[in-house]
Amino acid sequence: MKQRKVLAVTCSAAMILSLAGCGGKGESAESAKEENKGAFRVGVILSTGGLGDKNFNDMCYNGLLRAQEDYGIEFDYVEPKSVSDFLPNYRMFAESEDYDLIIGMAQDQTEALLEVAEAFPDQKITHIDANTEAPNVSAISTKWQEQTFLTGVIAGLCTKDYPMEKSNEDNVIGCILGIEAANLRQGVVGFEAGARYVNPDCEVLTATVGSFSDPGKGKEIALSMYNKGADFVQHIAGSSGLGVFNAAKESDCYAFGVGGNQNANEPDYIVATALRNVDEMVYKEVEAAIKGTWEAGVHISGIKEGSVGYDTANSNAALPEEALEIVEEIKQQIIDGKLAPCSSAEELDAWLAENQYFTH
Image 1 (tube, rainbow, N blue to C red):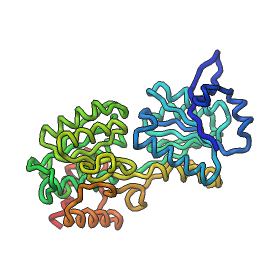
Image 2 (image 1 turned 135 degrees about the vertical axis):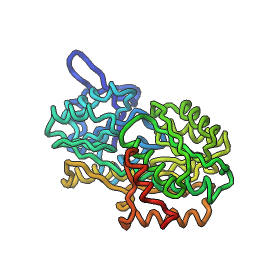
Image 3 (image 1 turned 90 degrees about the vertical axis):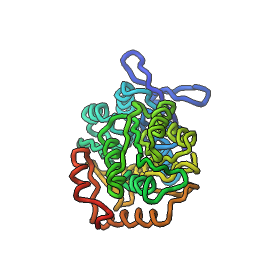
Image 4 (image 1 turned 90 degrees about the horizontal axis):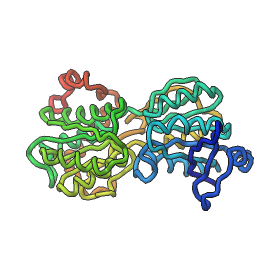
């Protein structure tokens, strides 16, 4: 079984595949295709954070490894450094005609993905974490406002009425984005909605790093929030969020992970992770393509479907039992359709006016 990191290289007018590893020995797309003839092949354009982010990209990779183990697939991947890398990477995979499925990660790849989807209408493309619409694209999206809603509830409860060891009396929490993107902004709204659903007077600080791969700036922003009185900070920032964990430890405050369970990174300071099963999404898309059940269209899921939620496993920062009971009750309200977190900042104030946990 093979998995290879692929570098996009322009040679005259042709795009070739240059393989990293094996002593740097390269081979052309045509020879690679011949070598792996008959295998189900997947090409992956990772998000700009790259592997090692302990988050989005690593979860994608783990999903591919699982598909490789179960179905014997082979996959190649690229680690773009900037937005300008997306289009040549998509074109490289599509023009090779070597891949049964191309998988793109994150909403900022949309423009490049759509251009290549139109140019290669027979190429199956899966777009993770986006609502991209095209006849040959399966867009897998989750309700970001639900993913962070329950960690917002935890923060709102534990910064005031159900304090933990490192809580303070300022009633301030924070949320940090990696980049400005509509789905991530929904995550901010969900976090604030959850906090103010149980604690309407809570102040929620927000900021954007401008990158998924700048933990230094992530730490700087988080330190600023902690210095302003925040005792809980949620990150939605890829590997930039690793800096948030460092800041939490340095400030003796709390943080929340995002994506796969990140609690073990700093178990005394990370209370929970706003969970999203990206590895399962990737695995299911590959499985569907292999079995012939893959379908184009936008596919959205949330807490009810088990795609998002929260996880406290591997954290030493134990929640007060009463607070945990409230979080679980609210989770069940969402599953039962009795509560639907809002998804936009424009809706937030009106939603909060209609929805307050302690007035029920």
